[in-house]
Image (tube, rainbow, N blue to C red; front, side, top):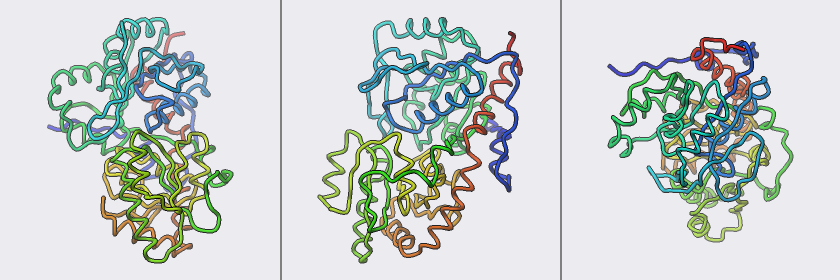
Length: 400
């Protein structure tokens, strides 16, 4: 028997709701909660998990809860209120992507002491089955533990070899959240759990179509935007080659590449010094500006559990051209707010880019629909659903 998948109220409303969501009261607790969010991935590392942790913590604090983020030290990190760093984070290449792992002397003891000092009502671990902070936190927590799973994969050698060990860790969770249906599809190949689906969220005030123009974007030609880590699975080489095909059809455009990573020299070489390809480096706060002032967002990613950057683009009323993959189908539909092409098909990607360049009316329609759909993923709504899970785990109330 396959494990069951529970879809909470938010996921059902996202699928069925014909009108934008109106906020309702979050679960009532006898007092504000003390919550620890444990993650290997946090700023200055960039990625969907970081964004999820940051914005959930921000919204939960707005509702009056105390939320600490427990992560590790890495180059470029600086002190932030309620961010506790233990150990040192190192990048590793794993499962076709760049991952991170925390190391350090007495790391387990430091995790234990951090959790004890915090006197938390609940520990919420992101990507719970990856080393090392998440697995240590599962063992050392002395209160209920919730886990959120973010990743889609076709195959995992680690999970295959460590299935029994990791299933025991998974069984310690009081609740297992997945950000999408595609995430449960991947995990069900190895594990059994009663998944609750709560999608990623979007800050609709930050990501909006009225953001100011950023540097590096031309005004005389339409802009095709790429935004993501320099990771092979994100498909930047595919986009560069498709962009050349677009230029070969006598269409004028600028390809703006927002992102960075260890493979930057490889992608610079792939661009070949093309004056219409602009690399602006990694950005954090100004991402909405790049979306809002681009004609389209191109996302040729080959694997994803959830299209968080698609949501960011949609919230800025910018149409999307993306790979037709399982994780993206959870967020967009072809011809509704996106044009979807067969994954890795450079000609099909070029065709869709040309189609949007030539049809301003289509761009406007996809963009407006995208903004409407993005309303369903606002952080107040997503946070409400996570707090619903907390209430179920804690019995709805926490004693004063």
